[in-house]
Length: 267
Image (cartoon, rainbow, N blue to C red; front, top):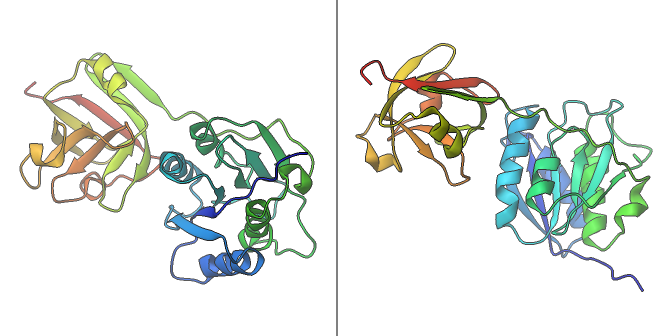
């Protein structure tokens, strides 16, 4: 007899923001269908319609969470032909749009073992699948529904393009993955990429609009207040920070843009 998998937790990640009732509506659907299941909000402040930052935040967070159903909605294609999916991993299923949002997190949870399309119920809003499709599916999964019960199996999931990273002697170019609440700018590049450049000590960090001097260090206190720092963040990525300030504001830089690190003019 097949064991029914039940989950005490649903994690919830969106770009819905906190101004409107969208998050509460999804919480309400889950509470009505699965009143004993707890919802753990990852964030609802993913930049609107920006799938890559949402995917990065989710992937970097899920290893710290209990085994759960992971509900994520950053969905600029809502109501189009893009599929709604359940992705199965060894540490719990993920529910959301088939636009690449879920797959980095699935990899962090042990990899995709199966995936199924969710048959969209009728009626369902053409613009609020979080409430009408994904939240009900997450609740049903938490209660023990089989992923295969939602619709046909799929094996051609949409994947996000790999972020751009280019390392040369004396120069590193990288896409920005995320910008956090403090204005720290997380790059796709890692310390291994920086090592390939040979850069150490003082460097120059460039956005498309601004260039500033910075120091390669370990933590914020390694540089004086107001000074720029290149460091390795808690997720293992290179990041740009300002001790006591916002690197995103200093560099006029946001998620999905490009950042370059070069040797300083004096170095």
